[in-house]
Amino acid sequence: MKWIGNRISFNDQKDKTTIVIDPSKNVWISAIMGAWLGMWYAIGGTVIWALNVMKLKGQEELILWIFLVFWLYYAWRVTMSFFWNIRGQEYIKIDADAFYLKKSFLHFGKSVPYYFDNIKNLKFEIPKEGSFQALWESSPWINGGERFEFDYFHQKVRFGKKLNEKEAKLLFQLISKKIKS
Image (tube, rainbow, N blue to C red; front, side):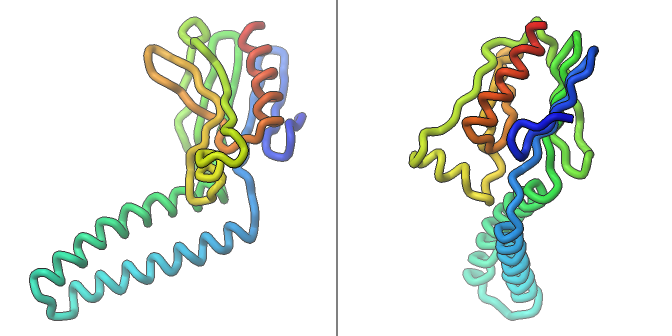
C-alpha cells in the first residue's frame, strides 16, 4: 500500500487499482462537534418535552413546531457530518472496465460502476485560498467539498471530499493514468 499525503492510500495491482480517501481527522474538532451535537439534542429534547407537558397557547405551540423543523434539519446534517468525519471513507476501484465509486460509512455503502466510455471531462477544482467557498468547505459541519467531478450521462459525479491542492494533483495524475491504460 502506498500513500498520497496523509489521507489517501492506494494499492496498485496488475488488474486493478484501489484508492481509499479518509476524512481529515482532528480529535479536538471531533470532540467540540460531538459536544455541540449533544447540546443540540438536549435543546431538541427540551422543546419536545415542552410540547408534550406544558400547556401552550396555539401561537406558542406553532412557534415550537417551526423551531423543531429547523432543529431536525440541523440535527440530521450535523449528525451525518460528525459520523462521516469519524468513520466515513471514499473507496475508488479502477479496473479494465470501469471506475467504481463507493462513499461508505463503517464500510457500508453501494459501489457504483462508471464505465470509461461514458466518463467525460474528468477534472478537479480547488477553491481559491481565502475565498468564501474555501472558508465554507473547510468547516467540519459541511460534509461536501468534493474536489473531483466528471460528466456521466448528463449528470455530474463528484468525489474527493476536502482534498488539498497537493493531494488532488497527485490523485488526478494517478486516476488519469489508470483510466487511460
